[in-house]
Image 1 (tube, rainbow, N blue to C red):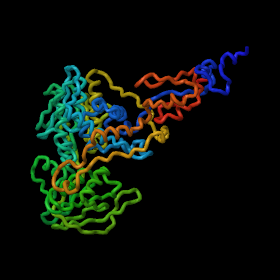
Image 2 (image 1 turned 180 degrees about the horizontal axis):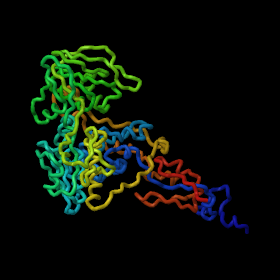
Image 3 (image 1 turned 90 degrees about the horizontal axis):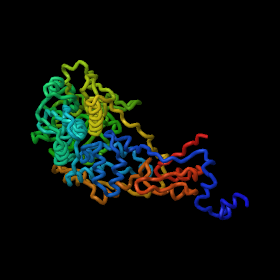
Length: 547
């Protein structure tokens, strides 16, 4: 009897029995093999706070909201805040944009953050190490660093010069964007972990304060609270206010000075917030004067859109030349080839009762006096990759260092600094994990996913916005949050859809059980690449054999 008749129980043209590939040593025919791998989702990659977004969305789509919340808290202690004020670059990178619309990551994070407050979820802390860290500033960067340091057992004291904690979260973001009960709840959670916050205490010399308090390290997270001025020819008695001062007075329930026709000069987020505040307080239609065109404004696009909805008028490519009584003279600008505004020599006049300057803020660096080893440049503190200044044991982040001045960035700096401070206190060097390859759109089979329109969060009616400071953007309910989480395509990471298992012609793929993914039996596999081709999320790569 010929050997092939022993190996084959059916005619060759008929479906082969299970195991025949193994008997035929099919694997020896391959020139490449499939390998399961984890790629980096683009949402994770773009998050300045370093959240594992895909992981917590995975928990959320299973309805395990506490597990999702705890996954967020591994990286970000302020989810209910970030679900309201983050500019969500993660969504701009979402591969689902090629199919329909980006996953509403920000709205799901907000839902989970609110769940954490509602049910009183807490985060455990490590045993005390005997080390103590001083944090200067209770804004997002300082709160983040304090939280992560306390989790690993270090004692932490935050020094805050203002009468309330929160930094620019409180003094720079109005209540209609960030309700104070949400802000206070997340700060309280950090305090209840054992973090001390000394209010109304300004650090004038960081080295002296460290010595007096017997601190082993310090993290500086002073926010940009000092308004930048501008010399404008001014005739008459039109009040000239500072945007950040207006928002601070609003928070303290003090008179803001806003009245009548308000003219705001500046194109950043502070300018948008001041104008929207003026619309609520005065009943007039505020005007924002911006040197740049709309697509080059410093303000985030969604904040500009919300201002326009609330009848704020934005005059782009304009600059203020002089103020004479109620008359404000504007020079029209033109965008050059490089997009920068250039003077046109053409003028126009508008009227106003109050001028508000919102041209950015600087950081008060007075506390660094007496620290010759700390280097500054153009108002920024220079730090190394470990967030440490030139002075050993003194770290800095947030608005103080050269970077994008956003809440999310500050939170990421706080986490990064905390990890490096922890290593420093232990006499070690922190080495971050190597990042995987980014899962690009080309690696996916998006046609496998069903069309599912993005869930739109409800918004307060315009008439109600004009009459108070109620929160403008509403919440998702549980059904909508679950639906939105399930729109995630799990880019670059196996979610056990069974496609590879079902399409393999050689029974070479074995299911290992829920959560354990799959195994390739290479003696069976002939390297046809059907599994990799049909994987929806790009979690299989064909690797050349070493022949």
